[in-house]
Image (cartoon, rainbow, N blue to C red):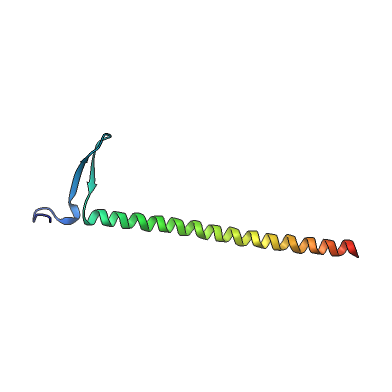
Length: 79
């Protein structure tokens, strides 16, 4: 538990790394940061999925147009 002088939202723990003296948040701050990262990742994924869906729909439309055009050309060449 935290002491009365250190609120839970600002509690940090020092972690020694080979690169630098990094401060990593613990407790509620770490949970909030993790939640925000997950939310941002999900938003990015949703954006990518929506882009892919639009591209697939456009490709289907082009495929249908090509199919109809080829069918019309075949009918004209038989006539």
